[in-house]
Each structure stands twice: as structure tokens, then as C-alpha cells.
Length: 217
Image (tube, rainbow, N blue to C red; front, side, top):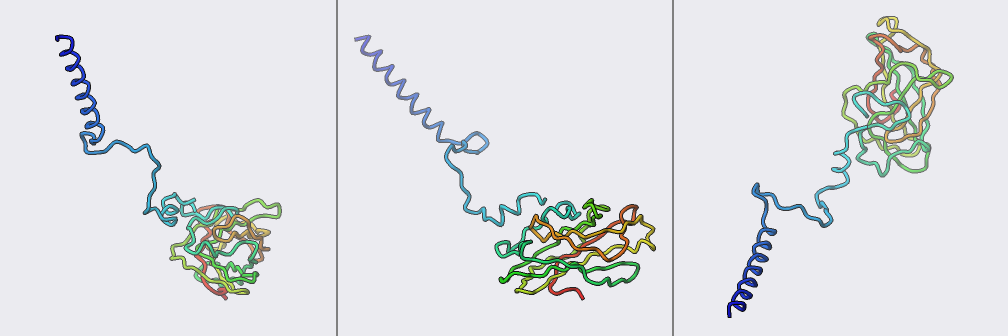
């Protein structure tokens, strides 16, 4: 009789322990958080746009990266953006004023489809051997817009710097301006005919404004 009683008691104790363990596993921790799930995690609210905006920009600081890197701002119409192979580049006439030299950097759609540009170009002055002259241009404040380019259409981004004769900056005469369309990696090279540009000293900054429709003429 004693052995049978002990056996029943042990079985009851084991059953109680299992029940207590199941109750503990279903509850959160003392701070109110639940145990992490080991199943696959999905987020219905993480749209592609939100995911892209959460990644730190590669444009970088406020400076435009060298001409071989894309712009930092993701285009809202990235699916229709213009690719380097579809574009030609040129530099318009200088429009000086108030001690500033101002050149329009123009991209023209050479393809048979309508495409878009959004943001700033990458840009760099280079010598005949392809070596960059001076620091990277900086972005001026401005609100980028999506520019739709029909076949043959153009958009321009302003490139400006203080006249070196006024600013006293160190100068060089570039062989070319290397231009990279927004969100692209392949550059376009344009022969530079604008004379000396600032490359050293406190007043050597070159600035860019975002693309607008037209040629800037």
C-alpha cells in the first residue's frame, strides 16, 4: 500500500511541474516583453521606399561625391530614370554676376523613350591625364524636382564658383568636366572651355544646384 501511494504522489508532482512549466513559457518577462519568436519575421509596413530611406545616404555628406559615384538622394521615379548610355552632356555659356561664374551643366536625352532625372549630378574637374583638380563640388540648398525628358529633351544643373581673380583662390585650367547623371555610376566627359577654376585655398568651393527643365540658357 505504501509503495502504491508513493507512486501516485510522484506522478501527481510530475504532472504539476509540467503544467507550471507550460504556464511560465506562455507569459512575458517581468518587464512586459514577450519571448523572441524563432519563426521568420516579416513587416507589412516596410515599403521599398521606407526601406531605402532608412539607409544612410552615400551623397554623401553635403559634398557631391566624385564623378564616378551616384547621387545620394534616391529618385522617386527611379524605375524610369535616365541612364548614362541614353544621355549626352554639355556645358553651356558662362553667365557671370556678382563675382560669380555660373555655368549650366546640361544633360540631353538621346534615347527614343521618355526618362527622368532627379537631384544633382556628380561632377569633377580633371586634367588631361584624368586626375581630379580641386575638391569635390558641394550641393547648394534647393528642393530637387523630377524632370521628365522626352526624346531630345534637356535638363540643366547649375555649377558656380567665385571668380578666382576676386577670391584669390589657387587655380588650374581643367581639360574636362566629368559628369555623372543622378543614381548612375558611368560618367560622361565634357571638354572644359571655361578657363581657370579654383582648386585650392579658402575660396575654392564649387557649388551645384539640382536639375531643372531646359538648357539654362
